[in-house]
Length: 282
Image (cartoon, rainbow, N blue to C red):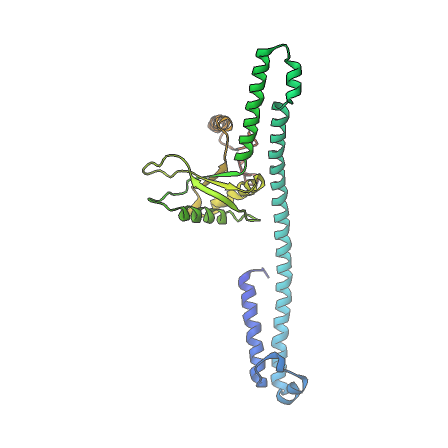
């Protein structure tokens, strides 16, 4: 027996129906009124036999249904654990990326002054480099909490609540768990006739963004959202680098279309098309 909500509802109706038959036969209104004396006084052998056989059949079916439900729950738990592991792996990759940026670009002001005490011009250049690194890290941290939504149709004279409703529908369609809280959202760019501007959604944390992007692949299952794309809010430098990877990947596809190509962690990856489904790009 395969478990499903429909089977569960059907079982509930059948059990309720049989209970009602017993109550009508005993001429009582609720199960609490059924006692041993009532059964002996009002239930004869033939009706009792039929009722017992019917209830036994239902109990047997219910046991099988419970077994199937338990198996389905275990299967769902295993899938959820696998998803959480992959999500944690993605989050760790983002954390490592930020740590490497800080480790490479950031130096203490004391070290800078010591090294360049006799090189005024060199000191100025180094300070500017550090200031630029600080700004870059701050910008990366701010953008790490944003999700960009492309391909969401923009209506004429669109109200804010309509944008929020559209984003909620998109996030619902990803089947993400746990669900994330959207702090703010708005369309960006200059409005042009016949074009839909992207939406920037600001979440509470970078881990929430990773959760959304991890489940974004589920949008392909819905016809309504098959042209909607979710992506990170990249810095200008990252956007240029990503565009370069996209161009490089297109050339690779032209040369060999027998493989599946995708971008993740700022690298181009390739797998055979007959292998497992493609993981989410970033």
